[in-house]
Length: 190
Image (cartoon, rainbow, N blue to C red; front, side, top):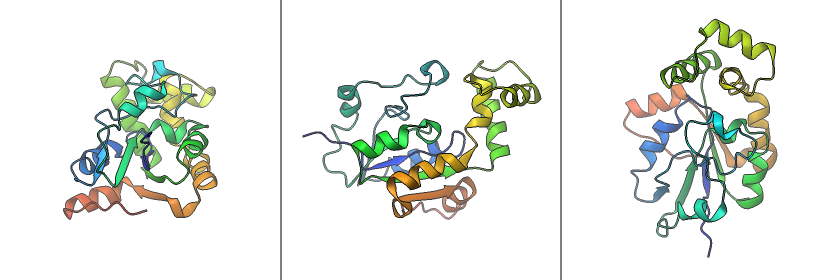
């Protein structure tokens, strides 16, 4: 029997998906694969623009969840699922009853954090202003383009609402996640 995830963390890059992943993987009833960001359902994303290697074949992807037999919640955390235009549909086709967690961050703060991450990884050489101007001029499929594209939330969120229904999509904001952490509790509510 194939064991697929029943929830997905698809929040924007630099919005808190890694923090949520780290919190949740320590809860016994929740299973998250040891590989964060398998990007399996991000078929339109240029793999050269990802900081981790995407898993493209079904057998390798399902191996990530083979040890989840006793978990009630089995999750995949890949922020690329939010901005890949086909990921919501592909996830729905395979896992129609899945719950979706979207984490969003103020788009300006998210863009600057994304830029700083790329600079730190040696993937961006332009100044922040130059990278933003470059991204605005073209529908860029390079690192600069993603600095802006990943924060254009309306269409991204709408795809998940359209596929899964609002009742199966939870939207959290980075500030909410930080506040829940300060109180010592993180709730998986959607």
